[in-house]
Length: 77
Image (tube, rainbow, N blue to C red; front, side):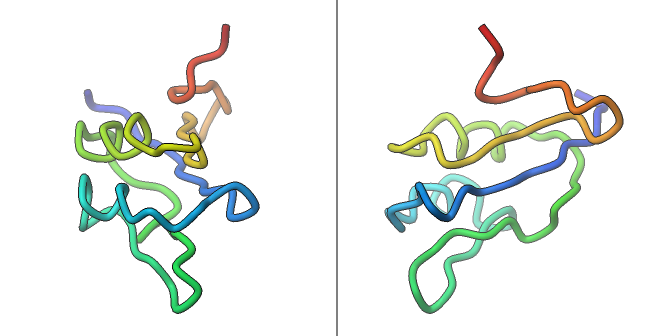
């Protein structure tokens, strides 16, 4: 992939299912309130982070390119 990604979790939407941690344990963590947080706001693009975003049951994870803000997930329609 070669890109850098900016990862955000909308904690107003997050239901704490933990699916993101299951898909990408090095990419996400749950706090004591079971809200997801990215391990790092900016990271190298990787399939596990993308799988976590795609697998989130409420689409609380947004991935963008840090330089342009272009959406990686969810894709713009």
